[in-house]
Length: 163
Ligand SMILES: [Zn+2]
Image (cartoon, rainbow, N blue to C red; front, side):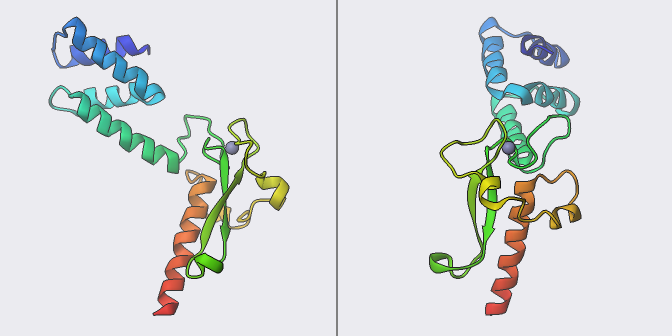
């Protein structure tokens, strides 16, 4: 749905008559929100009891962005390895300055989002670090999320040992 019609639908749903200025403001928001805009507006129409101010739509947008960067939305075709961030995390054991925790360094993915300034993950490592472990995770987990979980898990173990 085009953003203008989505916004009109929103005003209609709450029986609100928008001034032209107001509608512009909501359309601007919609353009900024990009691919999440229609979803957020639709869920506001379905769930909100009052007409949503921009602040509420923004909050929904932030929630949506943070959750979708961790969990891949199956309706959107994102790169499994990097979540379209262009970088793949590699987990390192504690050493040097990071002697007390496992830590992550980023390498370039091989998809179209790849950051050319970084060394290539697959050239450097040949294969995924957690190839074997990734099958234990639900399909909704993207690879960066799996590495992050493993890091948290290992650091927790480390903390408990040091106590
Ligand atoms: Zn990628």
